[in-house]
Length: 353
Ligand SMILES: NC(=O)c1ccc[n+]([C@@H]2O[C@H](COP(=O)([O-])OP(=O)(O)OC[C@H]3O[C@@H](n4cnc5c(N)ncnc54)[C@H](OP(=O)(O)O)[C@@H]3O)[C@@H](O)[C@H]2O)c1
Image 1: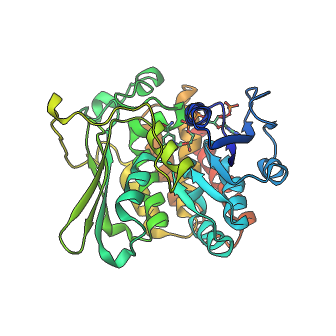
Image 2: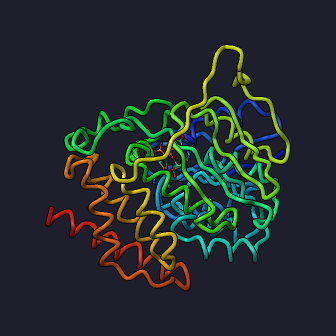
């Protein structure tokens, strides 16, 4: 029996994970946590808010599924990696903010880091742990979000309701807005850099509106392997929870004969500058990815509260990156400071705007 601690149990990923765990006789919940909504009775140990690592210490799980949204997921990610406990990671923000520290912790701890993000799960499966030198490049696909064919002018007055209407994925509000701005793909680019040890110039992003191909790896011998499936997060969640087994899920296999065309095109980084800003932050290194993430979290929250227009999200991130100290963090305390400073700077930008 694999004992799972589910963090972010009330969210989109958390609820789908509960479904997968309930249907699998080899999986059981030993702990469940949320930020504010009730989780009573979901697992033998539960916690709402507070220090998630205290819950993990008590629960002694075989695997942590970190499905918390935002920087708040970071201590749990580091706890699992440091302690050699297998980590199924949906909380991309923690790896973006703390990539170097997380990899060092994993080297010390020795546990598995299994991505839950669909693109990274797909790349993980195509790569089969092959070393970076065998890889020509990795391609992450992006649905393009609800505004993919719109011009900058058309985006000036979009509402939170319009941004939250994602065409292919049903997700929590923060990642849905990130998908609409392409910040999500920027976060995923940085996440992929750390997960697979590839330099940024070997990671491409293409828009693929139907979200059938989740990722593609081009190898140095000329072969390319892609991962295909209907867009349903229960597939990568199940893969991460049952790895290295591949368990049955209720999701249908692809029906190619039903008529399927796969369309790909380059992202419009002028209309959606957050993708290019994320790439710049990743290349700059140090705590720049942490600053990118912090400013984006502040700006998305302000947009959802109608304190900032949609196009203002990228402006806040750009200004914060231009002014923040992005020197490398030596430890978690440094990173917590970098995150708090960047959030303050971003909030200041909002007041001026
Ligand atoms: N949804 C997807 O399809 C998808 C796909 C790929 C990756 N991801 C990533 O997975 C993560 C979760 O996404 P989501 O869409 O499931 O988000 P969501 O629906 O907004 O759920 C977020 C979860 O995090 C919990 N939470 C927030 N702050 C917390 C804190 N301080 N301590 C403990 N729990 C806290 C929330 O609890 P409350 O409900 O009590 O607030 C909720 O359970 C994000 O990093 C996202 O980028 C999601």
